[in-house]
Length: 113
Image 1 (cartoon, one colour):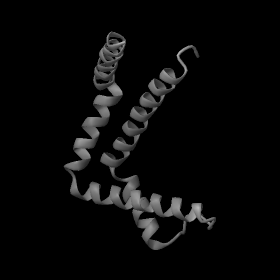
Image 2 (spheres, one colour; image 1 turned 90 degrees about the vertical axis):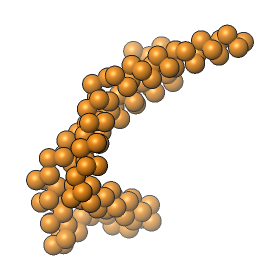
Image 3 (tube, helix red, strand yellow; image 1 turned 180 degrees about the vertical axis):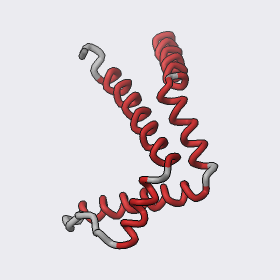
């Protein structure tokens, strides 16, 4: 039984290395590093995450989640549209998460094509 577990762990490590070297992972890590090195982009991204949390909380309480067209939201939207580090990070994050989801789905459903 231990050899079976050892084989699974070995394959898991190989899979982890493949995921680590995949272009989506490499791009995601590069964009994350770039975002962390840009204080203005990082603060803006934090605002975006906070807004997402607030929307999720409001939706879970059954409240209206329509985007308020306040001046603050317009300013943030304009800043996001002009912030390449954040846009690139969000694209690469999406690609990375899609990769992880595909791998996870395959593990759960190995026979599905």
